Length: 121
Length: 107
Image (cartoon, rainbow over all chains, first blue to last red; front, side, top):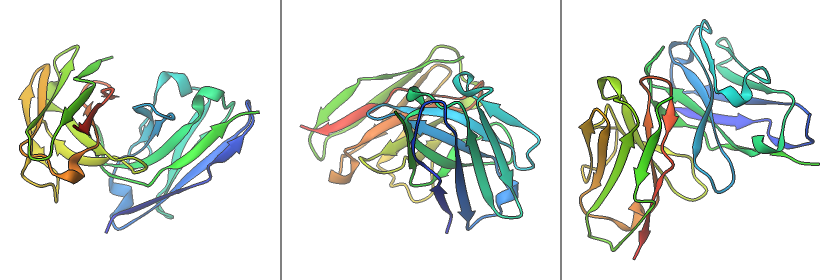
């Protein structure tokens, strides 16, 4: 059974940093794209970042470029999102999602339960 | 960037009725790289349809997807109580974008 479990969320002040983690199990982690998708309160889904199975390719949505860094440790079956210079509009539930393949194009066939990040003073 | 526009914003229907949800793209989507997800309150999204018309594992056959190019449709043939939720389309061809969602609510 595929499981994705996020951790590391919480309340942070504007300008602060957080690192999200996603522990994966039930599939061959290194063979799949992994991604972060976020959902602001009461809003729709939005791409944040994605990384290929071997970490050779990464993708970021424009608003987070230069502030967020996606990475993965295939030996630990874990996906990360380092978030720096956080802003109020980064407040959202962040979902870890498994891609359907090792590279583009891919859809998301499994999702974690989500973790809340709140940026506020 | 390809923009996906879903309509209607809200669909008010009764259990047993047919639901037809639309997703229109601002440019043609290559190779029908379009997916549909269902999201219930407080839950993560769940994959329903990929490749515009292929049902994901475990998805009931009352859910069907169709379309190509710029116009895509998700149809729920007969609504069950558990189908009332928000539905998102997503294109995964050129760039990666979601539609704004259609809420299917009980009439």
